[in-house]
Image 1 (cartoon, rainbow, N blue to C red):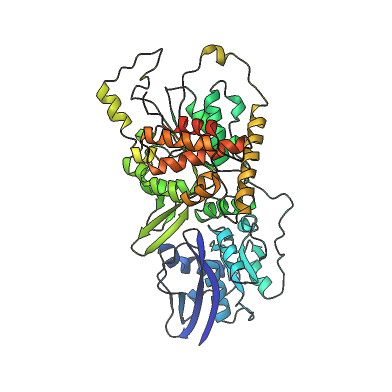
Image 2 (cartoon, rainbow, N blue to C red):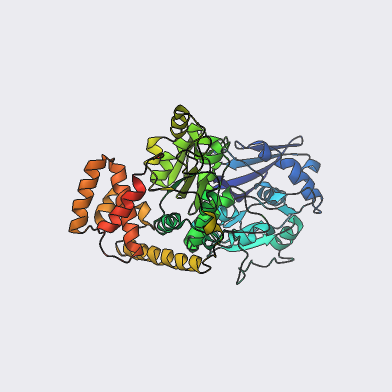
Length: 512
């Protein structure tokens, strides 16, 4: 009786979990069984492994008159996907003595086998490489196409291979595969962004977007059709600072777990911009499913989630945004367990003031009844609006403005202001030993600690708060926005003008 043990990994949310692939060869009539709570893709691995081994010049399991059992442990963890193919094949070769024995205790194998023995890429390679480093593994054997992606994790040896035959030669010391060396300028995905300097007019909206970008605040825009709401939302990415290495890894781990990396790019060098259609399901937006995957709010992590035509989204989708807007995470609970995905995004929402789009328009008459306007606006609940820091009206643009010239250096100026304000926040929080990055991430306790009000601002805040009957949540969100405005002006204290502008963004009604 021969037994081999090889290590592979399973994705649970965006984190990887170590899986032991045990291969046992015993006497008896031929059978090839995979146990360990695997899904259909895992069950079909035996057919892929059979063909791949045969076409790689070794004796496959279906030509063995022996009982072959593959156990994926721990057995109570659901196994999904095709990444176990490579580990099963190597384990079988070890158990049958077709390759010389090697120390597999610190080596991890992932990859899907083609019938001809080539190795296809798998999802979650970056996450698996991170797990291997945390557990002290010496090397990760993975598909060639996943090497760039996994190389974001430093301190772990990556040995990519494109064929099973090549890997067998390496393990027998006949033809050593090279260790992957991260290139000086690795490929990256650069998202196309509309530069804010391309938008004519809308100066107040641009000011609001600059504040949102500086502090990570959510934005709600309302205005007639064609006033530029979508262009403004798209331009927000152009003034956001480039993510640092830690943020790049955070974002890339989510996309890797979702299987959205391709040969054309292997990680993000800019912030994601996601814009789901209003017909998207709750699972598509929030995440989940039978095998839980990140949704649009997690794919927007450290970037922008744009919801155009906000009232057209399903009510349950909109209300499900309330928890991640507060916590920066989304917890998906299923019968077999609970997973938490990161969801620290900037929400940009846009809508028309009524079904026809021209309610309160000074130039075009609205054709909606009062009840239609009321019903349309009530599709967006008060609790959701209460979580949006900056609420602005985007008016119609005059033709004189459209015919005017663009300020080509506006984008550079706004980007510099945003970057400077963010650096002030980073230094403030780092000096205090806090792990947060922007003002919008502050808790109520941290607001009391970091938002220093002048004496005049204290009086102004108390008077306005009592007069407007705002919620405690609105109180702290106003303080966060005011702190960001003060950071843009390099002011050590939040003064009356900063609070006044923050109140101006908060207390707008959907319809004036």
